[in-house]
Image (tube, rainbow, N blue to C red; front, side, top):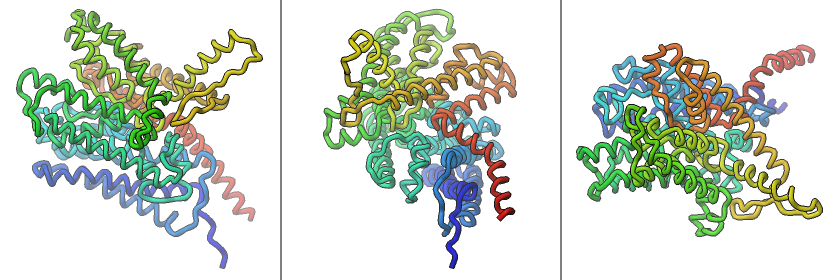
Length: 549
């Protein structure tokens, strides 16, 4: 009996996409579990049930005819990148429909562009939001808008998007060819040699931190639901908050004496919430291999690591600079008069903003970022471009690449002043060992950084063609979107009122593009576009070969 021909090409891609669609449908159904606690929000169940079941049905319709029970070939050139891009686009699209359908059910009214933007922001762990202020827990229409279900949906997109959709799938299924897809998603380190065990260990560490964060928030006085959502947003370095003004809301309510704590311990200060959030953000922005060093008490390897040392230097230096600037550049709510801040409040705002920017999270503990001053904008852009550690949930260029570039600059200056016959090692301490930095690794870091900055400038330029977007808004918003931070100095709702729906939608689509490119580290999206453009030619050649045969 002749052996069946292995499935390859578009059939293989669509078959695997079916597996992911089933998973994405299940993720979309998860918010319905909140009905067990908030039954008054039952009106929203069709918004999640319809897209969830449709995604599962389409996924099964793709999986069974194309790959189920059939031998499968390896991915060819660029096919893994194309599948990865399709996985993320379908996940974002499926995740957008609950917001879109909810508007027809009397919940928060959102156009498809807004819904897609919100879903992209969630899955890319960015944190931009156009969710109506009335729909947050502190909003006037929280119950009418079924706030808990939609906020939990936003949290689940952060949860699965932050750790990586491919990583989640590979922790549940095993396939000998999934390693290419894993690396295509931007994961450069594995905790264990075995792919499936590595995925499960990463997931276990990730979930354990979320539980600990939830418990810490609860003990500090936060509602368990809020604590869970805030913990996910912090560790995923996403930034979606349950309150319309983020962590500033807790400080404001504490000052008014209107916030009632829910924890075991008496409510003392919103500073406790902010400290917990900062710890979660740093953990999320740290390479997950370094977390295993802490668990194994390899403290020397942890503190000597080049990424940890760069993190410590960045936090210290930028906190000092921002604190100094805000003592006299901080403005009042009119944004016209500089009133300055005392050193204590400046330090509090500065260290939270620095960590939030560097970890590419997007949490904020101040009333308005625009009040922080021009120096703060500039420092935040630098931090958002650098980003967190490789192998973490943070985005941007990543600290390891920046460390290599900084070291290369130092070595170039050092060696230029010494005789050429003297050879000095070019090495860094990385993940428990001293590693030699070769020309190939240095070139990769330089090339990716140049590509990243080029994309940032191009998208910022595209945004600046829109009315009302000046240089600082364009650069800041693009840097925030591309890095997956979510901090913004653009009020999206006010922009729509001032410049119309068309310009507003274009701004959201440009920002969504930046979020997708940043989450997938640019190259897979480019490879997917090339593969898609090549598809008609390949199909024609294949058909021609069959006819000749």
